[in-house]
Length: 151
Image (cartoon, rainbow, N blue to C red):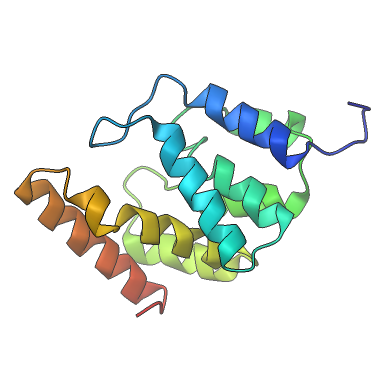
């Protein structure tokens, strides 16, 4: 890769898969399956390559899979992709309303979050969880959809 070249989607996917390789979701599935589903959902919803790249990385900073410094200073990504990833990165103790406002204020972020929520709230995915966790998460995802105007 030349110094000025941007990472391809294949390279972004590889970075995301590697960064989250040791992680599993709440049902014990490899976390990369979630990232892939979100990226595919963004593509299916008409998202562009910058949004698809952000989908692959949407949890990377929040989960400490990559550092914010790497994202901002070293990652060969567009400013828009970086902005979307940062918008989707929840901050400790952050109220859902503030999180939703940041997503809505960041061009391109809402589509990625919509895809993320769709996969998180997928009934087949939730069915693998115990009832109390399933109920808690379903309510959390419904509330975020409401805050984002996705209802």
